[in-house]
Image 1 (spheres, rainbow, N blue to C red):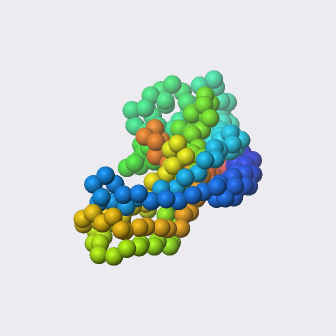
Image 2 (cartoon, one colour):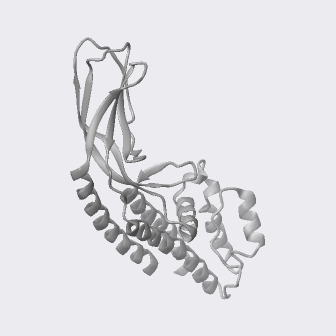
Length: 250
């Protein structure tokens, strides 16, 4: 739990650094709109020239390290509780397939835990979930492995359409709205919202408020999510996983 508490301390530091960055980013943020080549879309583009300070990536890496490490500490505590000692192969397994998990067990990763603890470890595995790659425990493992060799991929900023949208002009039939999700800046730009038209109408204009965020890549496909929220969810998720084992120590 000391590891979890340390992750929470890093999370507070992360909030401070991110908020300072976003305050500066909002001052330099500009918005423009343009029509697609076929004229059927009016696209909103946000421009933010600032690049993220690597310190933010380092703090995020420290959070996931503490979370991943807490699971290994948990496993060692379970082995001691069962009257045994951890070995060189001891490690809390995090597996997205049953085959991988069974291989980890054969390699002695959880050797020495009680049968009840072994059952809980298996139940906590990503492969028991319909979307194993998206489980909190797997995201922690993935980010921790990335951070060992490279800085975590955090975009300088990401834009999400705000509550206020203004559409100017007349005579156009709007058939759809799109991109309510967070969009990462690429080369200082993010096309974060558009309206779809039934037919081209050059006089149509679009403006909106913008919610500026900092985002992190959370999987190998480049999926991004808001950094502060993600780190908070990871902390809560790993803390919840550890809580599952409380009965082993009572």
